[in-house]
Length: 279
Picture 1 (cartoon, helix red, strand yellow):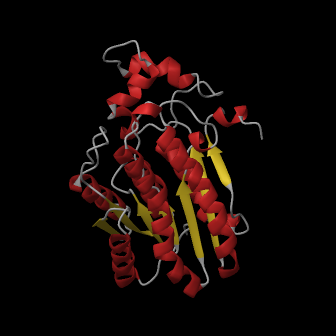
Picture 2 (picture 1 turned 180 degrees about the vertical axis):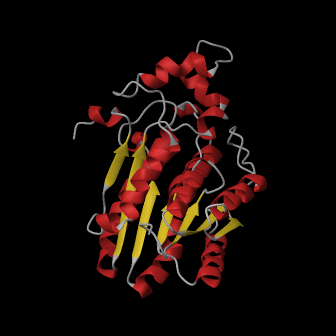
Picture 3 (picture 1 turned 135 degrees about the vertical axis):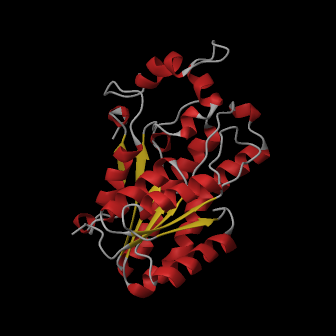
């Protein structure tokens, strides 16, 4: 028996990276999976975005674990599209037990150069997308008297760094949103928590040249080898990155029955970066 037998999990940003890792971790524990993703580029984001093939591959990998999977193209900035995702999920599986509000983007920009569009895209996806996803599933969870909601924040949601003011603002906002939702939804049997990862080994870093440049500003075209020391310096445990599977383990804890009385919390999976926090 798996920890999530009979459960259905909805994961935003499930086409690759952390979202795909969470989908596979939950499937191994018996859950059926609904994944949505934008699967197209965004003008202000230089990182190569996932495409329809990535989403289809995530579905195939879940199905290879003998679980049912549904992949849906959707933009978390669009309330109607998210409502459609929930509608399709309920039509297919009958219920949604878990929401992982994971979809996110990042691009470094000096504070004074952040355009209105940069700001809007970052806030609308990384914070607005979390809010709209929670709002989309909450009525169903309230009706059933059960739900597990986990949002992806970041260590920069607790300990800011330069060049990412818009991203930092969004990730700090996620923590406040989670705590507010936790208070309101607790009487209905729903827990709401957040995870704050350090840098994670995904395309958000490796397919985003601007991220390397932040850590090696004096090198014209820095490689991963050039920036390993700078990435490592952020963590007390001397590793440059953690794996998506490390974050998935935290997600599994939050959605398990072992965490039934845990809500409004933040969990740092940060290789000790969090040890520098004041509390």
